[in-house]
View: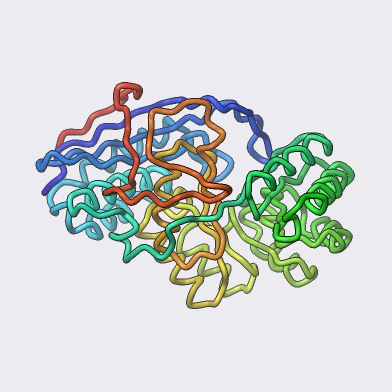
Length: 371
Ligand SMILES: [Mg+2]
């Protein structure tokens, strides 16, 4: 079976609750880019990535559409069953641009798994998990609102709660104290892990100052305290606080992850398809972390269900210790069906491919490459 056409679509998915963190600005809608890889066997593989991701990958929807259109002709030739040569060809053809590479890599995996009648998790080596307990994210807002949101999550069954910092030291600590009190006051609160994410908002020395003061709040980890390219700063924080430090924005593809490991700059790692560039490089970063004995999380962006389902499939076949795959839950309406949650856990779909159905009529086609 060979690829005959790649169609690229756009859709904006409005959020039920707009969110904001240290580097995102206010996000009211997810500007998604969707790809359909069509084959001569009549199978269509789908992929989706978030386009308005300038603060993580430098991407805009237009850039992803442009680069994916440039890469699509490279899917000619090899049969779809031989995925790796197609993916490697894309990797060689463009520097960076992990979002566009992930988009096509995900659609190829969906098509290849559907052609075999198996899920992407099975294609990736086999299902380790049937359900993925996911974290819930508390976005910026006053302490009372953060406490209320936290109580709701604990009652819904979430056992990992992550809140954003970077509003300023006083506000951050007031929110942290309110969230910790809310967790401790709920039945089952003793089972909840609380983690913080600064999305690179701090300088290394302020990170150390705040985190030493926050030891009494028992944080499970502190995610990306300093800027994405400040590996030395990350190591400085790790060496000077007792709270484990997780690298997210710094932990992009295999090269960056290998450097983090060599420098011993992080206690924990957080991987996402859009940063790695798809399932093939994601397997490489997971292998590096496993060889180094560093626990990791598989996550996704706030994203459409189709994009989240790719993270779910990758996570289901992984040895990840934590999962952040709730991103699609914030979206008001979306043209996808297939993912379900049960009490703070994402159920891994059993159907072929990504396990998500797409209503193509709801998407706007912006480019078609015939191969
Ligand atoms: Mg993060």
